[in-house]
Image (tube, rainbow, N blue to C red):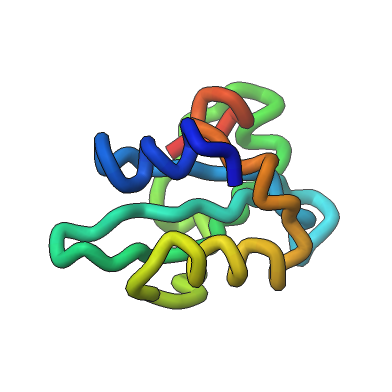
Length: 102
């Protein structure tokens, strides 16, 4: 994980994300890490139908497939989970760098 991304998690308490291979072909998917108030980190995935994003159609909760993968105590543990999902940890970035829509 890049230093500036690690700092976003730990210093500014900002969310980071990266593109992920979707479970279903007609969806876009991301993995994201969110710092929690108690100092832990939640690693989750989200999938959204491609047509909603490609056609700029508004979507809401029933359209989103969310999975909480884990809540961990360290950035290193979160990074290991991201890697286990098949994502290069260096791809993690602020959400606007990978079109994370949430």
